[in-house]
Image 1: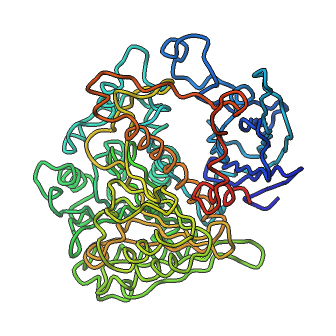
Image 2: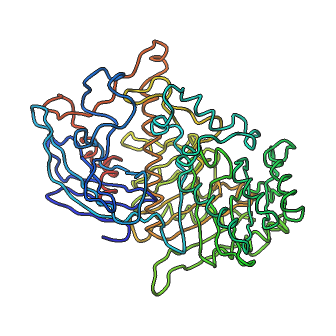
Length: 583
């Protein structure tokens, strides 16, 4: 067992575990699947316990009653009775305790009389330590699942999902600072680790009088974050964007700046947009004036950024990284218009974190604006072109990237045999249909009024984009794995005008974390997109309900193709999926 993966094969049955950030990807493969294979049961033994508990499935082979009354929306079917008909599954434990998680994966068969028969089983341990590299780097993601069955399950009984969703998020961005936050547990669930990391940094600085905080803010309407910054008094310096709507007198950004002018002092608050936008989302903590940790990434300090969108945050505790961001803040605070001419903006900065006694990732940082976007975007295009096994990405504004190295490399990628999945908020317009008819790209969708049972209609998440991540992962399952992430929208105009940061991480352990997140979001949106296309608007006008989703029985019973057949079509995307995540 390595630090982040574990695998075993028994009699042609393979199971592999991959460590994610507070989650685990379980991959399966079967060399020659028997005709009666109906899926995989997964059980988990949590740290400090002796008992295996089956992971639940939301759908089953059949229901004792009509589905609308038999199914209450909860995941109540044990995978020992309703096995997963997928070759991979992501398990997100409610709590990730320190210690070893042990998973048992089992082939499940169905006899001709319809009875389930357990088959070959594999047990594997893995450490899901919630911190990737202690003292160096911790990664966090927002949940990003307001449009999901999991969110729907948490809506109080008798309350309409749309009404509940609207109560959580202000209907107008400019009302954010006045919006009451009454559902503490739901905000914590939605914000997940990324938001808990943000508040952990703020609270740590508040508790320690010898510390100060420097902040870059773009969208800024989260009232609890503002309250903590006010409480810092003159231990705060902040740069808040003033481009476009942010400059309005009634914007949350302007109102927040005015409140912080009163609490911190006029010399400690700046409004800036570099040459386009002040687009960083960064917290830099200093102790006795020296930077010692920095939080960066794509997560805006706003309701949508924290609680609706798919976002990521990176918390670096490495002194060289903190110092680098500290110098970027000084330059942005004192002379943002000339930042592009500084050494900070004109090259990549490389930091080695591994030591003779401890592993660590190789880190590269690029700060914009700079005269040419090729400086930052060129290496991403090269990494995509050089990828030999896989490319996975979440790029929020891919539809706005119409030229340049990244656009060209992704266009080429869609035509290559390299396995790839992409997520964007709106369809890019690129030709994304692969030779086997599958799509290499998916955009935001949610289950609307006519959701197939046992799924229920979902809330859209309100007005605005929902996929906000910006990351690219190449060859996650190879030692040469790379991750590109940060606040950058990865566009030419942004790199040449906006204040932004781009991070390249050369490390397979971190690449696996981002790859699993890419899969999680792709699967979530792909299913919803397929459902929307399958149930046409013509059917809606006739008031028809889509048929319930059921697990498939063997061909000998159903007369239909086996659920796994599509995963064994040579050269297909599904075959690549099955093989990539289980080996």
